[in-house]
Length: 58
Image 1 (cartoon, rainbow, N blue to C red):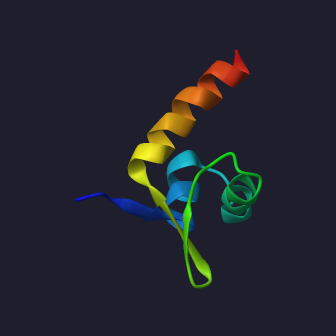
Image 2: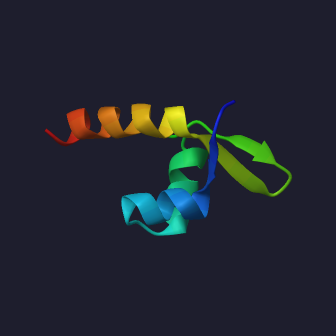
């Protein structure tokens, strides 16, 4: 079964503000699913984003 994380959980893991995570989602940088007013991000997508982000910083 796939594991989904909230924007708050991701913000905590990455040590950024929850608003920053929402901006990444709205800009298309972090794929997410919307359930009503809240977003859920597959843990798998977060891992892909982390790899992409590390390459981008170098």
